[in-house]
Amino acid sequence: MTKEVLQDCERKMQGVIDATKQAFAAIRTGRANPALLDRIQVDYYGTMTPLNQLATISAPEARLLLIQPWDKNSLKDIEKAILKSDLGLTPSSDGAVIRLVIPPLTEERRKDLVKVVRKEAEDKRVAIRNIRREANESLRELEKDGSLSEDDRHRAEDDVQELTDKYIDIINQLLEAKENEIMEV
Image 1 (tube, rainbow, N blue to C red):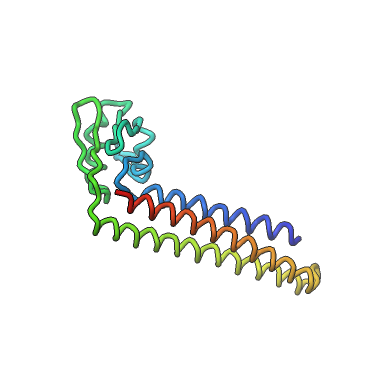
Image 2: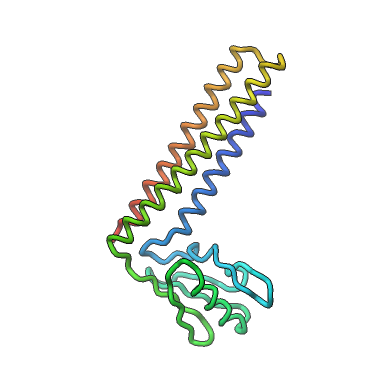
């Protein structure tokens, strides 16, 4: 029983780590990264479609994203979606491809992005702690039902705490790496 609780706890915590990586990838740095465009939805013939399902996105240079739509008719719709997004980027099109030049970040904008990243990391830490709380409650329920002794519950809670510490450390490492990437000129 405790093994199932621990496995479920670890699976959920790994999900939080994956969500953290996705959230950090979507935060713009001074470097071009195709993951910046992951959240963009394009109105493609009346259906909201993720941009990465309509085009090939590449980063041929450090400050340039190249978007090659598979359907040339979707070029204007892709441009509109990028302009509507909160990325603050202006697309330029030559009729076949869209180029997105990533401007260098100002010092003030870098500091704002670091604040955003720190808040995101704190939200994920809270999610990890909530998973820990749920796992501990499950263990207490097992003890109350009589399927777990008090000593086994304490050992299992220690294991849950180890998992919590491990995954919070991973979030802290991801945060540090993202901060360094943002502050890099």
